Length: 247
Image 1 (spheres, rainbow, N blue to C red):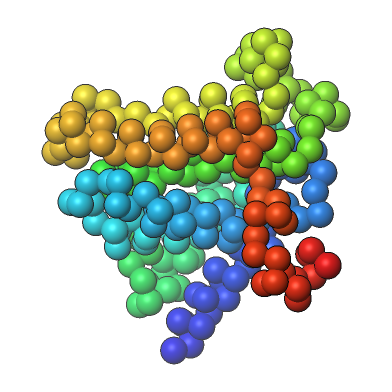
Image 2 (cartoon, one colour):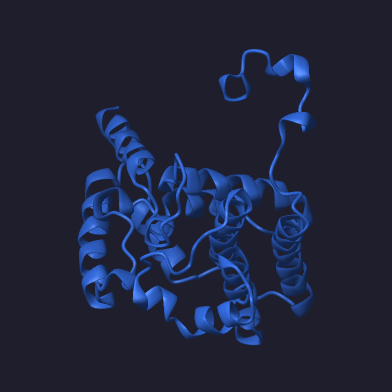
């Protein structure tokens, strides 16, 4: 069980690996999301949506993709191109991390098969996880913006602040949460070519994208109507008596 424990501890590093996006946007919060939080959120979204998705989807594949898709970041950290690191350099160090993980822990999990399949979007399950991943990038910022206004001109990296989509939507009066939602919801789409590749019908594709979009849209609607955050008054008072957050 030595390798099993070591792989568990590699995953544990993700709990100390803060996702880069919120730091680049200077989100002021006591605790920012780490990669482990991100993985758990994706697992929860996939589980919540399971009854709304076609039954032919392989849930084990979906969970494997979610659990492993960001595992190399335990070694590389969460690298974004907006930091000035080239795609080539990011790919280089990521490959080194993946090779290490696959060679070291191939007896525990088929990490090579899982990661290669996910990156190549070789099946519909990989595509589903990719779309959920995009949606989660928006829900995180919808939550942060619901908690407090984010100053989009406060020492933000120019490559982020001057992105054409950001500039356009900011000038139209949208905040950071709106912009992330509008940007990422566009990725929830299965093309005709992908339907052929995955061997699914347009109806199946519409069923999948509709479920994911509905979740994202409801999240966004609750942000707009200021109903997103859970208040103390919504929870059973007696059960809160030992909760340090509320006392």
